[in-house]
Image (cartoon, helix red, strand yellow):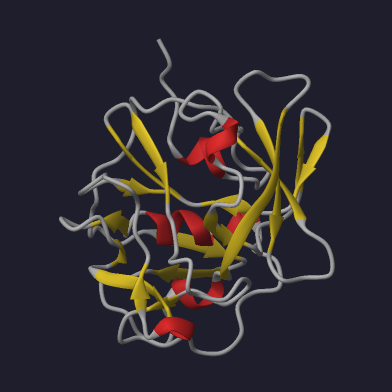
Length: 218
């Protein structure tokens, strides 16, 4: 029986293993969390303001252009993801137990693009795919096909403030602090603190998953 976290399926930072399992998916919570950054402690509130950690995370629209099975791990896929950069990024994910690799090809996805690159079973991963999970089901977040590849994902009614961190520092646990407030609503929309994740190039179209409602996003 697998007893691992949903976040492990998709993350690429060195403070988490790339593994799969859904028994420890957390329920959406509004409890603030604290991160230590040097000698200073910071706390996330349930409101979105200019100091919210979501502004430090670089969420981008990508398109999966190639998918391979990891040669040394049956539960891992190696995706090549177009972010409208010079070359596609390599991203290692733990999606293999949940969907066939053919279903990922040409799919629009949401990428945490400023995670610290890290090797998994010898393959350098350069980002993380966001997905919703509930019970034993996992589905990728899917931006509309009418949005622009590479554009930054925004929060409804709360435009990004400033530039995101160039690279998230694992010890600060910025993504952990943000992810507890990421979930899908009753209409399958991806939300942060109750506000929809949207793409602005196509008139604020919401980002959704295929069928999961009230699921944890990670």
